[in-house]
Amino acid sequence: MAKDKIVYFCKECGFESSKWMGQCPGCHAWNTFSEEKVTTSGKKNVTNRNIPKPTSLENVSATDEVRIKTDIKELDRVLGGGIVKGSLVLIGGDPGIGKSTLLLQMCKNLSEKGTKVLYISGEESPAQIKLRAERLAAFGNNMMLLCDGSMENIESNISKGHYEVIIIDSIQTMTVEDVSSSAGTVTQVREVTSRLMQLAKGLDIAVFIVGHVTKEGTVAGPRTLEHMVDSVIYFEGDANSGVRLLRGVKNRFGSTNEVGVFMMTGRGLEEVDNPSQLMLNGRPEGVSGSVVISTLEGTRPILLELQALVCETNFNMPRRTAVGVDYNRVNMLMAVLEKRAGINLAGFDAYVNIAGGMRINDPAADLGIIFAIVSGFRNRPIDDRTVIIGEVGLSGEIRGVTNVLQRVKEAAKMGFSTCIIPKSNYDKEMENLNINVIGVSMLSEALSHI
Ligand code: TYD
Ligand code: MG
Image (cartoon, rainbow, N blue to C red; front, side, top):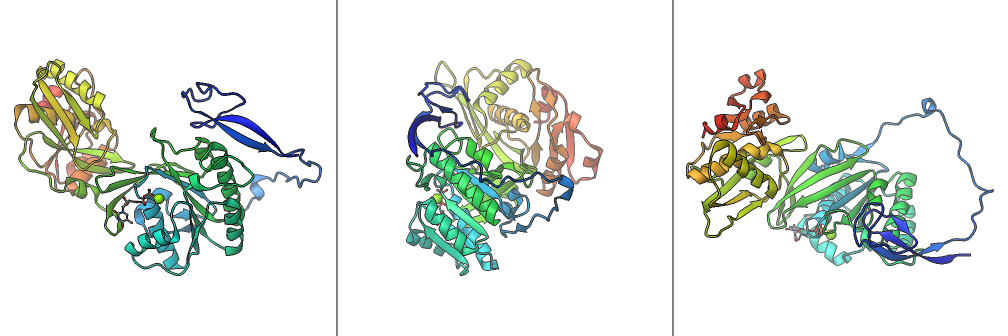
């Protein structure tokens, strides 16, 4: 006999409990438990089951993984060289960032090549999708559309259709009839994903799942979703600027060190081959407080413009603002400047900003932040053709960072004439590049180059 039971799930990590709790014992998050009804079926018949036998690894024949190219280079790169048949890919991102657009563009390329794709939407009507598709130019007739949220209907459609790629937009709108809780709850999301996994593995279909992201920045629904799928990709960027980054955080079939760069335009997403050029576009020349830094996105170095505005404060407490870089890091670097370089910033407001709306997390930007602040403070511009790379320690030492050779190569390629780098990162090979490389080991030494 089927029975209904009330259980409580943590929305963050999926921890299950028979009573409500304020704090989750699994992930220590507060106030994340929600009540859900779970149907437990009666006794299971164990005797008639087909029990699989283990085989020796040697006897397993490995077929080469078949990859379908999407012809969107940046997406292929993040997927590890194309879509793997039978894989389950989760694409997370803020609402309106462009997940549906990206997947629709992928469907267009695939359907033109003759790959059979099915786009399932629980959010938009066929007419709405058609409207968007028209902005992205013509589609081949291998592209099928289904607007439904019931997993039972979807399953019967898929089993009839011989599809190779399926898009589920989004997981939060899909429901399984056996589960009585509403769409988007932990039990539903988990059940739908596990059914999709069975479909993907059983029929060798690649499935893309769209997941909305919560305020905290994780895919809504439990973390367990991330464990169930083969790859997790996040689509991020500033909604106001057109730049979008596609970042792999988990990939069973490739590296997670890759980042795809896109630009949202009036006709969908466009790939960006040369992100440095895009980010440096429109940079003012000969202005104080502006420097060029290098950040590593995946394995690709990108050159960015960092700006600082330093002005006398009108308050007792000076104001500090950081956009695109870590606020606490800016405060720390300003303290290092006061103590180690004797520059008194107590009476000055400082605003630090990355032009172009990028957000970075790379310690190699430290020295650039310091240069921008000093340049803004002294109102003296820094040479336009210089790139600044290096982490700054609390004693004012310039510490080494990763992949400096690659960063210097990118600077040379983009036509810069000088690179200031940590001395410990100096490499003989840099002499062959058409760029002047200066190694510095202490802050005072570095500042003498302003
Ligand atoms: P969408 O793919 O619907 O986002 P998501 O599925 O992640 O919620 O993207 C919607 C945004 O993209 C919307 O604000 C409009 C913008 N957009 C363009 O700028 N150009 C286009 O060609 C398209 C299709 C969308
Ligand atoms: Mg959407």
